[in-house]
Length: 145
Image (cartoon, rainbow, N blue to C red; front, top):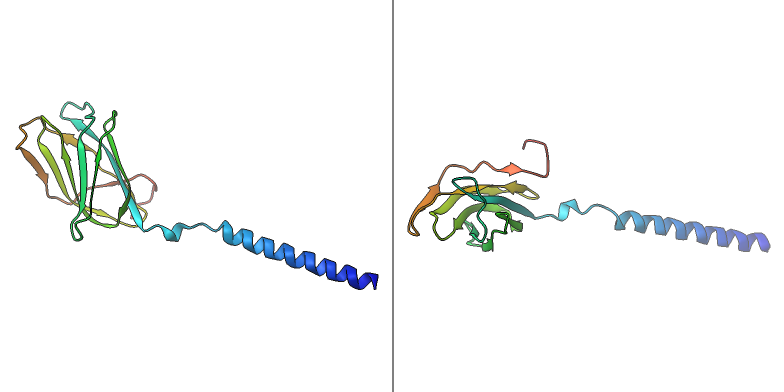
């Protein structure tokens, strides 16, 4: 009778260990497939290369009209940490500078793109529009896609 009880305990412990191992594997599985957004960042400077703090940076998805606006920080950087994938237009506005518009920014799933902007001194009504396809730098991967 002692061996039967010992066998049941051994089987229970083995089952419990296998269940714990399975749960640990499922819990720690990477969730890479869950990313459905992209990131866009950059630095805004003037034509002399000095950073521009406090500029309004806006991205708008062309097809859906989804829009987000942030202000550049003290070092001139901006960050949109979670944008739905799609085709975007980037606009940068700052008093004393021409408005900057970049069209053709295509963001894909999981992409961490960077687009630096150089503002030109000008009147409030001036606008610089770049219509060529934007060349973005992906900062999270050394591969070319």
